[in-house]
Amino acid sequence: MAKTKDATSKILHGPRETRRFGRTMIVDLAAPQLGLVVERGSNLPRASVVVTTCAREIITLSKEGIKVDAIIVVGSEEDPARHPDLREITENLRALRDKWFSRAKLYVFSKTRDLSSYDVRATLAMYNAVHIEFDWGTAKNWTSATGEKGPAFTQFVEDCHHFDHLILEVSLFRAPIDNTAANEIAAIGKKILEIKPQEVLVLCHTGSVSHKDGAKAATKAQRNKIVETLADATGFSVQPEEFEEFLPG
Image (cartoon, rainbow, N blue to C red):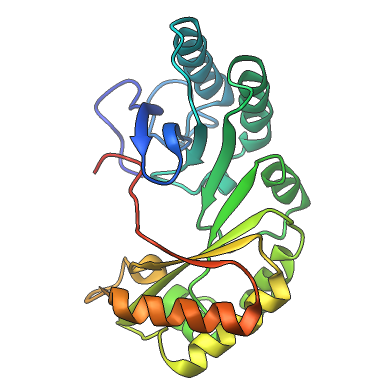
């Protein structure tokens, strides 16, 4: 991770209005730090830094009568699921939310492809909903997009079974690989039936191939047709969604 010139880059953003969640506070667990970090050689902020930053702002907002609808945990430089202090941070955020914004929802957005750790799964289960990137139906496309082998995909799908409040975010793209083909969508539908998520959101976005040259998202017309196909095939709530960036560019 690249180091910031500042002693602490911004961990907390907002509150600001979001289309999907109303007035929202965004917590960046991977905002690079030069001071209190989790370990030598890391730029990840310690739990104490994250919690103190959030507590100060949450208490101030509450005393000023400003309501918050949601608190969203994300990671800019590293996935939140990989933060070693995630459990401590999550427990404290829940306590702060319960005391000061009892009606607010607590969400986490993750692109992790490794849910094998019981502790990570148990921690994620503390959130009102876990949003997970899920752009693949076949092991072939999984490997092409992520570079990981097929058995890892099988394990990932199995580990997703542990959540009853999982929201799968399916990004549709046509390049450098195509996950909009009929066979891939059929395979995604079968995985949805296995995982049994709370909801599936389908976006025109490059998702897990964003880092690859020539990445190109599908069109809204393609997305809307695929939404209907997946809803009919699975019987689950499958909704079209617009991509929304929570952190400043």
